[in-house]
Image (cartoon, rainbow, N blue to C red):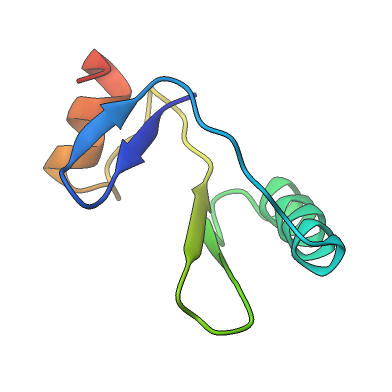
Length: 80
């Protein structure tokens, strides 16, 4: 697991998510889609109702990072 703070491009080690039931359901459904379609749909976005907050979830294989940008590769491989 790797967590990137998009505001400062630094790694995070510990977070807490506060989700509504609707947001949790969307996350569950999107995770199931990601797992079933790995390689076809690499990431999903879960937004709050106001589209102010966004959670992006992506699946990765450390042996195949070709579709990631350099910052993401560094986070995945070096955890920095």
